[in-house]
Length: 86
Image (cartoon, rainbow, N blue to C red; front, side, top):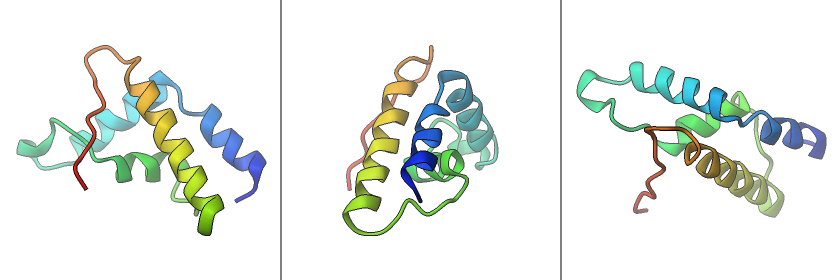
């Protein structure tokens, strides 16, 4: 992935888009499991499944996407970002 495509992905992380993605992802989960959506499916939806790259560059992009999602979810009324234990 080049820097331009990465910047396009980051720019596309808007409250409206993230809310719609999360609601769609939650609706696709089992009925008893719709209160939350994991970060990985959100990242995959935001990136369209594109490979963020390998090594330090890929990790830096992943962290950037994760931080942008976290900040954006905080702007959506009724939603919150909860850190998971690894």
